[in-house]
Image (cartoon, rainbow, N blue to C red; front, side):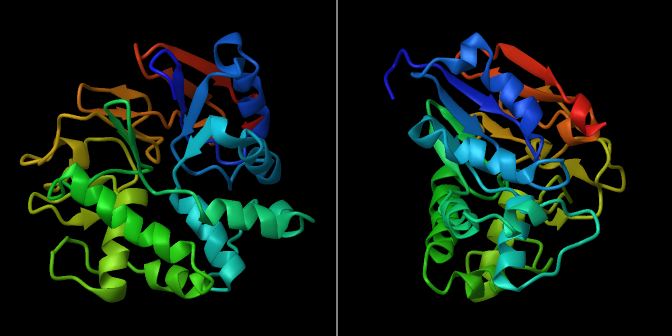
Length: 272
């Protein structure tokens, strides 16, 4: 990527392929030298998970994406670790003739991108982690998902305990904290332990605060771009940027230009 190359970051697509096509046809995003980042949750809940996944995969080196919790859920269903839920909408991927190629591509995506003075994850960074540490921990999971025995790794990712980081954690407990922080976290208690029940806005009450507002964050200098939190919506701060603007709920799909935070939004009428 050259210094003059534009980077646009797109929030949670969640199978809303029509809205994504609309965004990608905008002149600012359709230039072949533009790099496009995706903040995870490429699939599920929307009307065309297969179309969205193929569209992003076919962007090739032009796209950089991180895994979200819905992407991991798809991998878990393929691995036989979890069953499909009533609200899952990725049967089209499971039935696709290129299913194996798509799943292989998906499980080779990272959990964290760090470039151009910014960090991108799906949900958040634990305040106890430095960014160097977070990047190293993300690579542990990425490496496991890229092995031939990746279904076992997916099995080890699921569970809500422990909810707090400890450098002594090993095995599945360590993997769960890493993945839950990077792909599921919204709010934490004052001691840094994660709460997975609150899905509303940032005013969580009961001693809970958004992860990006917790005191003692060790590396607030590089802004963290994330999605995952549609109830928070578009939220731009010096140290964090939320881009989940509820496309799958019929609101909009948002793209942000990294260098100046210019926004382009695409209506998601197909998801209403």
